[in-house]
Structures are given as structure tokens and as C-alpha cells.
Amino acid sequence: MKIGIVLYPTFGGSGVVATELGKALANKGHEVHFITYSQPVRLGSFLENIYYHEVSITDYPLFDFQPYETQLASKMVDVVKYEKLDILHVHYAIPHASAAFMAQQILRAEGIQIPFVTTLHGTDITLVGKDPSFEPVITFCINHSDAVTSVSESLKQDTLAHFKVTTAIQVIPNFVPPTPPKATERGYIRSKYATDDQAILCHISNFRPVKRTEDVIRIFALVRAQKDCKLILVGDGPDRYACERLCRELHLCHDVIFLGKVRDTAHVLEIADIFLLPSETESFGLAALEAMSVGVPVVSTNTGGIPEVNHHGVSGLLANVGHTEQMANDVLEILEPTNFIKYKEGALETAQKFSLEAILPLYEELYRNLV
Ligand code: GMT
Image 1 (cartoon, rainbow, N blue to C red):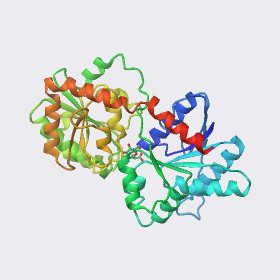
Image 2 (tube, rainbow, N blue to C red):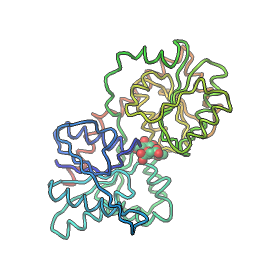
Image 3 (cartoon, rainbow, N blue to C red):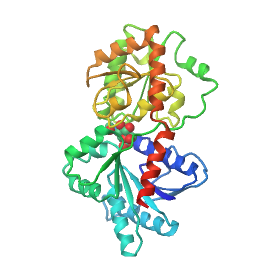
């Protein structure tokens, strides 16, 4: 099949899932055309069956805000027509689903039929989409997509609760992105951040308020008071300054390492002992799954789709939002030598349920039914 994938090219989970899905489809012989405004961070270099079409933004002085959606729709029309695509798959409803609908209508007027699939990722529904200024467009686009998928049952239920949905929503969970071979110098890299008897706690996110990154620091401070350990933080975003300030206030700077944005997070996770995800809400929690897939247990909140990924008492432990003391105790409990191996194995086993081999055929079947 010839598949067009529309995505955000950034570090966010939706972009990672869309890119890895495209790469996996190309690997199986499909022709994949990525359409977005800059090269997706996880795309890597030259790969067979993969093409990238950049949406260039016109910087015309009349516009205070550039009409990205219009240019994206025009690019979709062009790519569908000239690359003879069979299907479009848009990741994240805003504004990709409405641009896809417009492209579909333009092509229909020219006698070309193209179905489009919309995958809901979370914030497009739980945070942004609910905003009354977006709601009518989101509802319309969900209902006019040829198929809609959501990355968890929880997100499906949220969507049904907040929008008047008339289209069936199929849950297709995210999958574990293929991890690069383990770094041979893992021990050496680890020794640069911690001694053998120190545990390494890790958190990866975009440091937006929904991630509650200051809770990560608070949990770490409580654990650190009882056990020698280090904290590695990956990513960047609006709350990073607040986190840095909190570290200074709590005199933790020596033990907290801010790495900033990292492309290959698997290598950081390989040296970690516990992954922290204290989010306010999370439709899935891809970073937690990535941690589990390399045998790192997760201490997280129990909201949204997280319990579908992090299984309490198996791959990690879950607590109520904001309960930092509980989460600190959970970290200490998992780090107990008698528990640690059990949780590591639980994390690996749970992650296997989300293997690429299990999830990819679900998307392929969906495409086949629509084309
Ligand atoms: O978490 C974010 O802020 C980024 C966001 C995105 O759109 O990339 O992540 C969402 O999609 C991911 C991939 O499906 C999920 O793993 C995240 O849980 C979800 N984020 C939220 O629901 C807050």
C-alpha cells in the first residue's frame, strides 16, 4: 500500500509513534510518505520505501498567524495525487484531521477517492480539544474520518464523554519502538553519572504542566533522604526553570542531572533503575513503556491510560496524582533487593504485550478494510 502519514515531527509521543509506525510499515514493503513541516526527529537517515514531504510555510506579512492548515491540506492533495497514495493516516486531531478532511473534499471534486484514518493521542482530546474554541471542528473531524483510533481505552472513553461522537473508535495501543542495540559501554556511561551502589531514577518528558515535573524533584528529594541515588531528567519545556529552582532550594543540584533533549532515549533508560511518571493525566505514557521495554520498573500516577500500560505490582507501582510521599515509598519498595528483580522482569514481560509484532497488523488490517 502507499500510505501518507501526517504527524508532528517533534519529540512528543504522537510524533514518535507515527514515525516508528511509518518506519515499520516501510520495513514490511509498504511505501510511506511522511508529510509535516520539518524532518521527524526519529526518522533517521536514508531508509528504503520512505519519503518525506515538507510543508513549507509562507511568511507573508499580512498574516499575524501563518495558515499552516491550508498549506498542509494543499500538500496532502499534491502528494496523494502525484504519489498515487491509497490512504492517509493523520496523528493528532488538531489540525491534521481537519486538513485531511479538506484535502479529501478537494480530491473528491477532482474524482479521486482517498480515505483517512485519525489517531487520537491524548492532549488533542483531553486538553486542547475540549477547549470550546476547537470543539466543533474536532467533533466534525472525528465524525467525518473514515476510521478513528485511540491509543488507550481511557482515551476512547474520554473522547466519548466530551464529544458527540457518531463514528466507532477502535483502540489500538501504542507499541514499543524498536530499541537500538544495547550500548557496549553501558557500564562506563553509567559510571559517569552514579557509583555502583547509587540507584538512578529517570524521567523523560516535555516539561509541560501536565507532566508535574516538580513532583519528580519532590519524589527524588524524599527518596534521596533515605537512599543514596541520582536523578536524570531528559527533555525540556516550560517547567524546566521551576524544576531547576526547586533543585537549588532543596540542595539537590549535585545529584540531579538535566540532560535536555535527547534523540536516543533508550540509551539513557538502559542506565536507569526506576522511571518516574507523576503526570496529572496521560492517555498512554509512551515514555513509561519505553522504560519498561528495557527492564526499568515505573512509579507513576494512576490516571488516564497509565494503568493500561504500567500494571500495579507487576511492572511498577501507581499512586494518586500529587501523592509524592506515596510515590517516594513506592520507589524505595521497588529498590528493595528482594523486589527489584521481580519488578524488572514484570516490566519486561508487560512491555512485550505492546510489541510491534502485535500492534502493526492491527493498523495494516484497518488500512486494508478502508482501501
Ligand atoms: O505528552 C505530551 O504532552 C505529548 C503528547 C503528544 O501528542 O505527543 O503525548 C500524548 O501522546 C502520546 C503518544 O500516544 C501518549 O503516550 C501520551 O500519554 C499523550 N500525552 C498525554 O495524554 C498528556
